[in-house]
Length: 222
Image 1 (cartoon, rainbow, N blue to C red):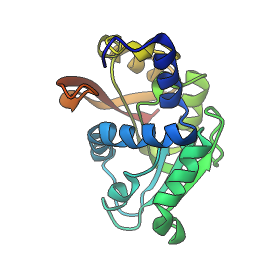
Image 2 (cartoon, one colour; image 1 turned 90 degrees about the vertical axis):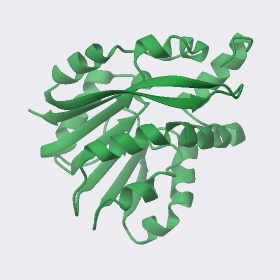
Image 3 (spheres, rainbow, N blue to C red; image 1 turned 120 degrees about the vertical axis):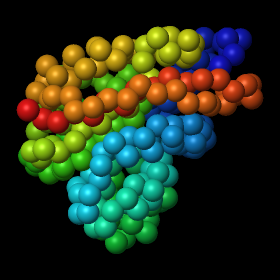
C-alpha cells in the first residue's frame, strides 16, 4: 500500500479490517475475501476435513468461502463466529442455501467467550484474526474447551516481519512472529502438529504485484 495515505485514512482502514461496518465495510469485506482466499484455501486443506466433521471458524468475514469448505467432504456442518454484525448478516445472505439446509450457521460473539458446549467441534480455524484478539489466552482456552479430542486447530496469519511493512498495521494491530504464536498457543494447552511458512503473490491497490508471506500453524489439544 502506498505511504501517501493520511494517518486518518489508515486508521479508518484498520478499523474496517478489524470490524467491518456500513457500506464501506461491505466493500472492504469483498476485498478481504479475494485477497485472503488463497490463505483460507490452505487453512482448509490443512484442517484435513473428513465426512461429518463439525467445523468452527472464528472471524468468517462475508463467508464467501464457506461454499468451498462444504465441498470438502460429505455431511460437514460449518459454524461461523463474528464480532461484526454486518459480516454476520452478509454471511447469512451469501450462504442462505446452506443455512436453509442446516449445513451452516452464523453466530455473533464477543471475541472471547465461545457460546457452545465443550467438545462441540473437531475442526477449528481462523484466518487473519489473531492481530485483533483482545484477550488471546482466554480465547485460546475457550477454543481448547470446544475442540474435541484429536481435533485440529489451524491459525493462519501474516508474521510481524511482513506486517510491519503495511502502514495501516500501526493502528490497532498486535503483530506476532511465528515463534510467538507457537509459544502463545502451546502455553494454553495445545501441541503443534505441523506448520507451513509460505509465500504467494498479491496485487496491491497500485496494481503492483508483490510477494506476501504467511504462516499456517496446525495444533491439537493436549
